[in-house]
Image (tube, rainbow, N blue to C red; front, side, top):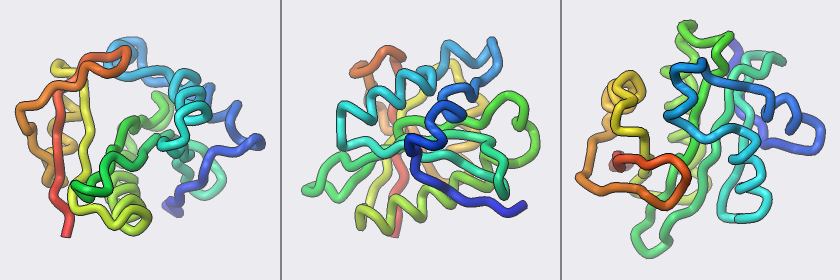
Length: 151
């Protein structure tokens, strides 16, 4: 694996928009097209493609939450259905956390996920995220909030 992260640009946005999760996972996450539009109009969000060498395998959107709280949000994270089961999520998550930590000098990273998305919750828990009791009802997909304290 030769994993790296690239910002979404006019050259790759269409490929990113075409990535999709399985039909069973679709209720758990906004479409990439929706997220790309959101990051274009709400400049606090950064959209990135997740690549293995030159193959686009996933997408993430993250952004600054609060300079006062020294926190950031990992708002979207997905691996295309064709590449799931190959360990990409567990390899990209630390890369995203490191990138956010460096970019924002944050001490906490938040994310929200659909309360029935148990596989994603288990993945995040393996990296130290925990449910903090908060609810995220700000977007089209209702979610429970997880947080990670970073050093």
